Image (tube, rainbow, N blue to C red; front, top):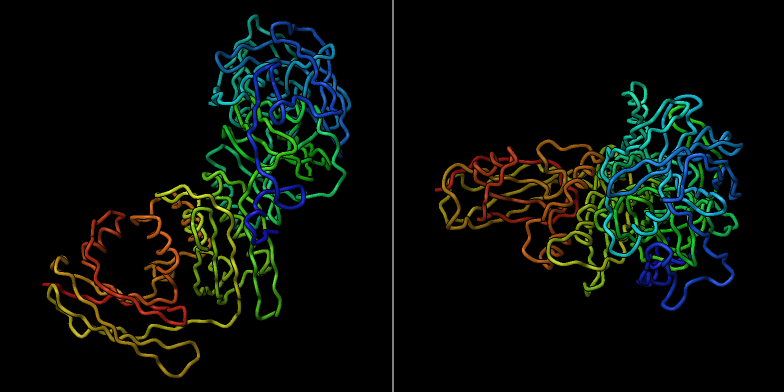
Length: 618
């Protein structure tokens, strides 16, 4: 749950506290850990010795470590088949797995990525890529060498080699029960690899990363569509998860144990489960391939519990739950992820309170979201939408009073927007259509990098409409000169009230206003004013997609003012627009129109209806 205090956006295992200090992942055996001067947590076993790739030979045998159920680390047997050479990124080790743990999993399963492999008690690398053959050859896999993981996860090292497909050469070719392999192509997904392997070229096989499934728990279907689009750029398709959060005694984090990486934590959970490859002091390495490939990151590191391994025909995967918070994932590179235990990242707090006035009850929910701007601009709206829909617990029409409050360091006051919302079928989504703009203001405004703290969304929902129908809009003239006055009589009929409410407004036509045909537009300033309004869920998706578009303001102060006051559903706009501008907007062109003419009328209702009245300017 998000608290209103700024300090609460820094997490501890139970609440927010502490700050992410510098994370150093030094290269190879020079890896150091913890604050300056420390190298090993007292009582931790020493880091295992490394067997260099140059000494790895076909025919060597050893073992790997992973978790098949709960938190118990199991062994599986490993036999080295050869080494594949892949150019500047990294070489890969080809091996075959066997044993009860692998049989129980149905082969190398998603979630096993990062499982450390040992020969003669020395670590050689992390299980990272799997072949996708049907039948007995599901136990062929590839490993990322441990030296490459240690080097590439050093500070400032670029995430090289993440592009796919990539090709690896075996010299000499390696005999396997699936046939001799001279070349391996790394594909984006298990489906791509399986499709290729169904009809391969001679001595060429395809592999794909042993996927780290990104699961979403507590995410509603509409919000799931937003999440999928947000993560699509990283070639990740999240799936609905049912494990979520679980209370269990956290085991030691050591090679072979499961761990979680979270993007969102709380009443909405978005994260992934993988396996620890290596630990020295409070630093860990895992996965053996990227999660997002996002480089320097600050994501949540947790313990994990494995419920079972789902023996899917396509590709088996671990089904599990995330546990207590352990630290920070600070690196997400082509050859794996690196994290630090005991230091916790600052996160962005989201708090939602929904008061259902018809049922006479209120519910509060909250979540913490990672602060990386390119992810937060999709994750924050997704989390808010899920939390509101969960708190409301129904998809129904109605009306709502909405208050959105934002806080950021560097902004001396709370940024607040208050408005009314109405929709005939989905008031929950209609209530949060301003959240994408709020998120962009905090994480992606054009003028200044802010230090976002949190967002609070308070909604009071009722089934009775809070609407008024626009029944008349009559200008006193139809032809007006530049510099002339236009008076407009506006009448609205509030819902289930017998009397109409009349207002008269006037505005001056600017002297540089374009001459010729124009239209007087009268209607709500809010989302209902579109000539072809989409359902709220589609509007929400579009607004999230448009977050990278600058808002057309000239300063941060103007952007904040616009967010707080403009475009409200309760405001009636009366605006004169050249005909050419309407035509250009309809064709998605930029008309370059800088001589607005009009005004607005505040009201106490959501105003429905729209007038478009022909005018002439001379």
